[in-house]
Length: 163
Image (cartoon, rainbow, N blue to C red):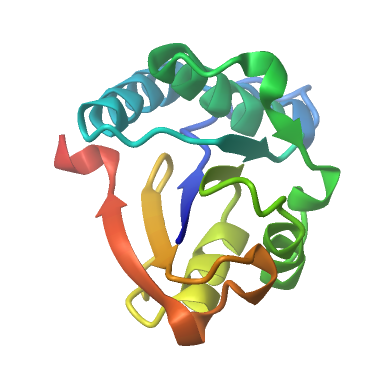
């Protein structure tokens, strides 16, 4: 069984006009939302075997906040440059390349791609994932390269506004 948690990065800071998009940090609400959502994941006893992140500062920062709460070694985060400014097809390709020893994977990324990926991987998703939303998708498959809509189900969906 494989479970993928697609997590949109937390709210970023648009007040800094001179920072490139990839270097944009989280804002105060972003830090707060990431902290809240990671605590909820911890309460639910959801523990990742692997964390993958886009190279954008806001995605890595969100992943790092989850690492702190979940006692996950931040040095083990896999940064995938192909998860920034790309398509759902590229996200699905990255998922297909995950080592099969990993059962529970967190993937931190961006909209609209993360929403499009959730929609491509399950029939249950339709709405846009707001910042720091989490979509948990599960499958009975043993190989990540066959993780697809035909054998997946949405097992978890939560957003900061719920808390």
